[in-house]
Image (tube, one colour):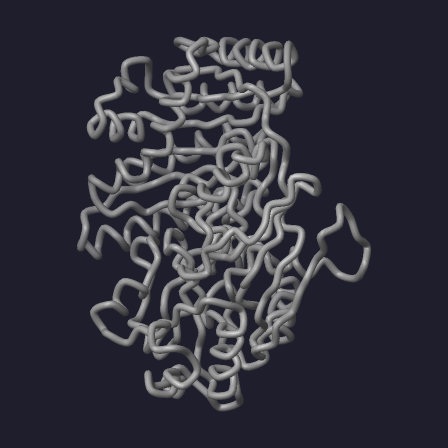
Length: 467
């Protein structure tokens, strides 16, 4: 931010931007602006943007950022708006850059196993395009049918299969981005490896639009995956399910998915879709193994034995692919099912995998001591837990109380050597926890990097790290 500037100073007018872009790229109608003001983070603050631009290419993005940098106007990048931390929320007087119109898969190279895409490409659309060529893009957040690759890059999104195959950062080979000066830079590589300089492309992954606006992404792909074997287990309580997770980790098997769904989540989906999920027990574990051939069956049998050793009330290796797919589809329905009941406050803590049982037990104790119901959903295989609270819409007192409960949850995760966010990003809601997790010296390093990339302080101000 320029010396002496503040949010009240950082304003622009629609006519200022009209000369930069064709008329169809600019939105100024307040009724339409409202739909770009925030993501899906319940209770996170936001403001109405001064304008929304919908660029079609990198040159248009660079022109807008350079113009805003010269005048100290804040710029907030936006994908599909499916985020859960407030990272895409508009601030007073800002220009929101929506990447919805930059939605092309530019190329897929089966020989090099890479894809080049614009940031507005929907995750599932890319996965389908890759599958048509016998290739696979693994990162699969629950929002994959709607979230965009640019948004996934911004938060370093994970998903169901990241326990074995990694998160978005593991697949980003290179980026084109616009810095806070309005400069276009190309980072990373197309080669299988490189030791040329710092890993700047990786630095932008997870930076939530605070360092630059990503305009093109080069992604590593994998070959078509082997057949998956699904293992299902029901448990009486969270600690028992947590012990099963710990047994799987100790066995040495790395499943391609290991998901936990508790009684409140199961009940919400059943009340909506009548799938009979609660008939088997209070906590459901879903595992998949995809080692090729007989090895996959052996892995699945090992996981099944781990479930049984931990006290599963019922467990089986599914022989019906359609039934297994339906169970994983039900897991993806949990969040919208809970949204039918009220405003959903969702956390995104991650703890060491061997401490999943302890963290689940602490969640139960925290819920009991505060007189609330915490619904638990988890990528249990990599320790990424999503505890959720449902509060009445419009009830500010309950919203504030829910936030207090989740501050306790974040503190518990940090005390176990965990992190405040596994895949949703810091945004606005995790800033206090991040300050607890990182030492002051490390926070200063982050702020120093921010100043280099964004000297005017215009990119997503007030998020992740304050100046």
